[in-house]
Amino acid sequence: MIGAVRDEAMTATRGWATVLAILLLFAPKIDLIDVPGQTTGLRLDDLVLALAALPLLLSYRNLVSDQSLLWICILVALGLASCAAGDGNVLYVFRIAEYAVFILLGRFSGCDPARIAGLWLAVQLPIAGLQHFGAIGVFRDGDYMAPIVGERASGTTGGPWELAMVTNLASVVLLATRRSRDSGRVALHLAAMAIMLMTGSRSGMAVQAFIAFFDACGARIIPAVSATMVAIVLIVTGDAVIGDRIRGGTFATTFSDIREGAHAAATLGSDGQWWATPAAHEVGDDRDASMAIRAAKWRAVGNTWAESGPVAWLIGLGNGRFGPAVDGGWVRLLCEGGVLGLAAYAAFILHLRRRVQQGWRSLGVPAAAAWSSCLLATFAANMVFIDVHLSYKTMAFLFLILGALSAAADRPERFAEVARRLTRPSTPAEPAPA
Image: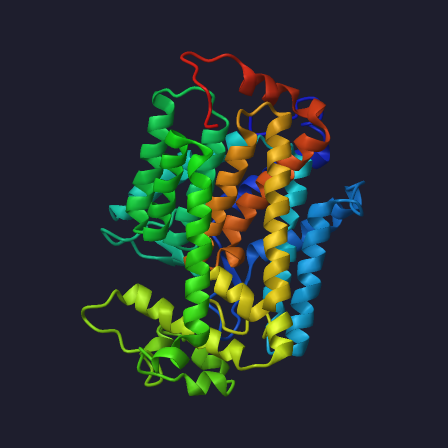
């Protein structure tokens, strides 16, 4: 049973919240209305979440005092202010409010996070295998694509990178709640790595390797990894903002059309290759195309933000100003949300870590602080190269776990069965990472 709360699991609200959470998390994304200039439009899940939000909000007694929802309101307010002052797209602002419905679904459903994570791997691994070997097709941008042997698997998500990111997070949740170092942990690592290989996601593979090292070495590697990620963000942002001024331009383009406000030049076109236009960076044969394209985007976005003045530095150029794919979450947050937007989102993620830690502690999870830090590091590392905060499946999974663990922290007696299962002696038993 996915639900963790036995005494109230059959009430009407808990019943439909559990079913709805599972369906929305695992169902492929299906477009209802296309939005010009965007890779995805208004989807079926958008409609379902909008209809579910009102009864959930009306049923939630601690709505006003919930700190997680307060942070969501702060992020939405900053996003609206940024769009009003800049040239953003309010659809991007309301995405995070939409994803926040999963926090309520997690609270009301009483989901056991470990079972949700286990179900994710159990469902996605065989589907990814069938997609990779050409037995079934994949869903991309709301459309079903015909099967191709060797295709990068995406499971029931919107793309390979999204499947990889959620699998990273699911691995951390499962490892955190397993007490013993037995063959089950090895099988978990192998299953996650198999998914990474079938997705072809290099960032996902690197993060999964970090998770494996963390499982083996414990929290001692967190400071080094955190320092490395901060250094990468600073180097990338600094290079994007001042690189051309110092070196005279490593890349061929000056991106003058982007600085003049041509929105289309900073977004993915219908062919998905805006960088192939004359004003884009020319990728040489001896250069990693993926990284070169990212560097070109980051430099264009960074230069646009740096030349936009103090208001943009403070509150950004507007959420969605640079279209659906900047391929760098932290760079995007800084340039579209400004210093305030980036700081607010970082504070929200730290709040998320604290609530996850409190929930795991109430359930008796060993080394709850270390594993909550690992979950945060996993999210932050993926944010370096992917716009994770805009990923529907990733944020749905993360917020569903946040909601369930927040409920466990606030009312641990409702999750007594989960706590007994996690604290039950195992054989052989070894200490979790310190």
